[in-house]
Length: 159
View (cartoon, rainbow, N blue to C red):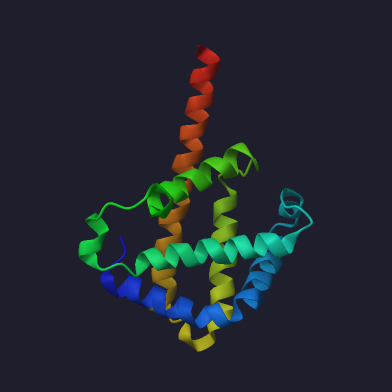
């Protein structure tokens, strides 16, 4: 579970990444394809668009970390609800892109490596732990979205 300090640290560190977002996206995908060259075929040739999606989604996720504790219980529109958005993203990654569960570890490793490269000494062990916890929660939620999609498909085959 993320503490208030974890959330503050994530938000602060992301503010340091934003000015170098294009470079960070290049680093991320470069590292991901270095770790798993076979993943390159999962993406279209338009990597500029994909990199923009990555930065936009990370910005959305970090923005949700910046809510005050009492705001976490407020009603929000479905498209602004982090859990619903991440569940849907997991479903899309499963249904449209056929992303295997085992890829989440490689993506997490590429993300942490990217943050380390981009933030340098500011990427402390404590900050790494915060981002690791956040990414682990996101990956688990995405896998839940993928599993829900699998169950729905399985139920459709039974009917």
